[in-house]
Amino acid sequence: MKRLLAAGVAAAALTITGIGTAPVASAKTSHSDVSAASCPTYWLKALDNVKIRKSKKIKATALGVLPKGKRVCWDESETGGTYHFKGACRTGYGSNNWWYRIAYKPKNHAKIVGWVPRDCMDWY
Image (cartoon, rainbow, N blue to C red; front, side, top):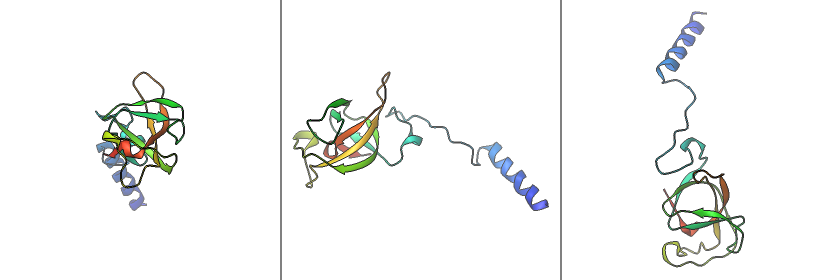
């Protein structure tokens, strides 16, 4: 009984001091409109202005534009339609058919979930 009481007191003390398992607030980073706690995998940064597509094809409906330098979270990557770009989004390493599914929330707008070409994004 003494051990259970001591363990409870220790857990309470850690929680009060902020060291315990208190819920973590999802603080927003200065680079993104998506919170760090809500990103299940990795952050990406747009190399240029990139159209967010409804499906993994260049001719798919554009849902919005991801601005150059904007950080976003991605949760899935799959092969899709082929693309060929020049400049910042140039195709490299034979990856011209890989796409990332991203979630982006512009200020004062609804969240956009769609696909962007992998070569237009960089790991952050």
